[in-house]
Image (tube, rainbow, N blue to C red; front, side):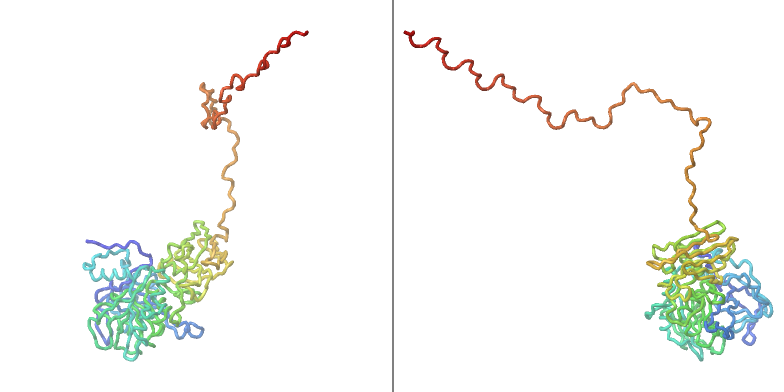
Length: 575
């Protein structure tokens, strides 16, 4: 039998599968309430609720409900909020979508809630195995339904993948999500030419590592003839028999049940993430999502807005809220406030959430104060991550506890050009759980060139100093992180060669006598011998023709060539 082993995944990827619960929930129905006949082992889910930023102003707190609720999921994909338990301490330390709790016999399920009758759920031991304790058949035909769901859940929580999304236009008896399916598809996926949407911005922020695609077109298995449709361009219309005055929990679970009725499978099996776009005035907040899950829910037009889409799907991926002296108030990224804007603000996530994504891990550095680390480098914005010159975009200052500090240069450019706060500044953000899983973050500081921030970390006074910010070419911040704000450049070291030591008392080796001269003379130099004579023809030693022994002209006449003088006159003797 073959198994598929997933050996390389982010630590934040954890199981979020309600299908691990009991295969059925049995109980007696009394006035539309179900009284549980047996204890039920169900997965625990945290629901994060987002409110309109206007509700956070002074004097507006009365418009807000709770920021989060404690819930369980059932095998059919429904969620139930736990009510009337003995406080909430029982949930301390539980991980949403990973841990299981036991709902006791006698609890009452109704209208999206479970009344615990004053009892508290008990943590189910041995259910926190997550992705690391399970094997999955690699042959789809041989997988059990639970293995198939486990595989879907594993894929859902990887931070890098191609994933599917289904957006649901919800229609009630007296209200409907106000836009057309085509409009919704364009706002979520850009199918009509919209250039900024859930799909485009996640692809941009992850530099192509996490991509959301529309669920493929699919016809209904059973057509109820009530306006419910098949899936087209990632959008489906679902009609439910509910009124706006009913709670959003009632609407939500009714939508989940209707999807299964018309398509023959649970909603979480259709797509990795399913967005419910409710009619206006059904819910108190603007949106909510279940942490490490598949489901997010929106109030009418908030389903269309980029920031709400990014924020709620971020919760599905395990990202918690980004705070700054209050919930949502860190506006350097998408896990703070949401904004009623169709195509903005164009930004990604703060330093801590960016670390959690794992998208930039090959250009991230860790500074460990306990090891005496000192960091001084150029840090670039995540918008420039793909640039070759950008060697570092994130820095983690590691504490021995699970709570650490994350540093980035929040460059206001490109995919992060709409960051609402701290643009072109260096930010420091604190977050727990080693920055790998769900934990709220706190923006500690924003600094321009020359700014400093100091914090005691592992007993050492660590300072982050912005040495400079370059605004030419590919912008970056020169950052130093050191103990006591010390320079990372060491003092001039002593000479590497020690001075000559005093003479030793004894020679280290006996002297080697100079060898006597050899009998054989040293050979001639290796260079060629000088030319024995000029290379030109040598001068002649004597004229080449032999000298004539005597002049070539006739020798002088030894005597006149005339006859010898007459010894006496030639005439007769004188008379």
